[in-house]
Length: 129
Image (cartoon, helix red, strand yellow):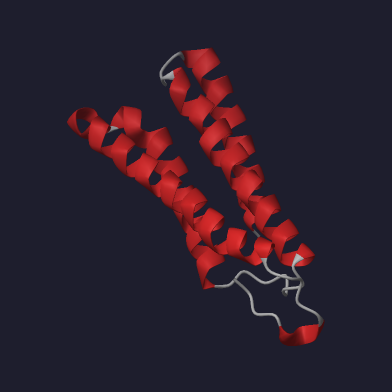
């Protein structure tokens, strides 16, 4: 499901880029961040989590931490794309977006890093992260 969201960000970013090229009504950074923070960030975490779960013998199911990771990266992308429209709250939106982005990748590093340094789980005993 999360890869679908990543591809949705890709399509949305290209639509924003085209709309901006035709009308000039949007800041170019909105499209750029939909493509980078949205598409690339989401797909990178999706592939890294899926590969780690598979290589460590855990079920290919998004557990609570993984869902939080995906929620944080999605919130970060949404806030980053919308930040130029936040007016006087733009700086706050950028800070919150950066914090959410850091939480997503920080949680991945903590939980998935711990799984990667442990021996592979044999059999059905593994739990989703």
